[in-house]
Length: 495
Image 1 (tube, helix red, strand yellow):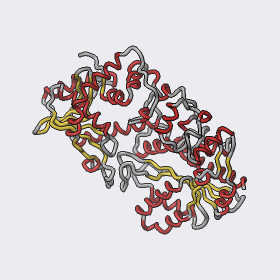
Image 2 (cartoon, one colour; image 1 turned 90 degrees about the vertical axis):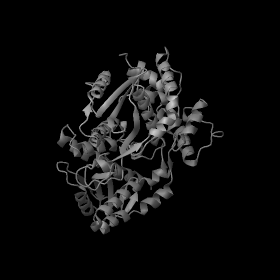
Image 3 (cartoon, one colour; image 1 turned 90 degrees about the horizontal axis):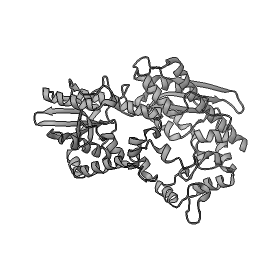
Image 4 (tube, helix red, strand yellow; image 1 turned 120 degrees about the vertical axis):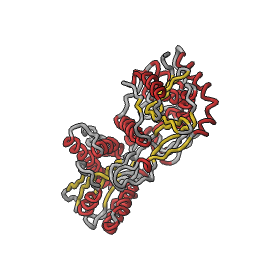
């Protein structure tokens, strides 16, 4: 059998960007390293796919012995069909240089039906093209396919006991939508095959397509001419406007003609601050913000995780589940700093949120303002906990009513310095205001990694040093609230 030229994934890659396809085929070494968080998403997709097989149990598995031997699956699939198997996992077909693997192929009384599993919560246009290339390959391989469906996550499913896969998954036929785009598939296949056969890299410049529908893993190569700080970092500037500037040959902030390229007030502040190396401080508003705070002061931060397959009862797919908090407390001005923390245990399947709530209520006491960074997040999680534990509604509402947002002075640009690079994220504000303090000395440096690690622990998939990683989680969350303390101290010094 001739070696395939395109796979389902490279077909979708080529539709997004022909240059990306060519680089993938001929210059794979230029591909960006896969971040741990993205790999965790891929792993989650694999787990979802395996669980979805239980919708059609006892199937024959046509998986290859390795990812590099996909054609094995073509032969296995042919053998299973010849033997009369009616349910085949990872059924794989090849036609016209295209190889496409399908999650589940089922022969029902009215004929063969295809099911492709996605870990998302809806059917996107990209999934239609994904299904169309599968349909094209399967049907032209001699299978009379009666229907093709996308199996995806029902985000309204509420876990109560063992996972009910019939309720967890939604099966939606995309047969009619696939037939609508099917006529253009052969030409797309032919075009992409020609792209791969070219002797030179396609001359395609960077653009909005670099991140749509997926963030391309060759951006490190294609964007290497863009400096670390550029027009693409201008806060809240629309993507099309950024590329309008780029198309004019404008890349750095000093190249912007402000008369012909007007910016809003915050964007203008960002640009002029960078050009003049100037820090902007609105002492009056900062003073009002600080004077409005009441001691004892609490500095609070939550960590959450979301999983496609719910781990605990009374949770939904992708619901943000609180598993940790850090709390620094200063009872009076210049008073000693105290620290409290909570990290859920994962050695049992018991919902840890009631322990989280009780300890948080105790640690936050009943008076004094509670500073958070991005109030909408913590407030939203606390309201979720009220719904879950109405008996503690009064105590949780007391916490909610005392919340104050430390992000406001930076979001409103009362304090802005060039080192913030247009962002009011604490990861930018901290090194700008307190350069001696950062996250770089920590094993865990951002919240996404913390969420991934805890999810692995909770689902019994973590294989590292459990005790050490729990300590790393505590250190990361503690750094978040200590960072808030130090930022607050800088603001106090200003006034």
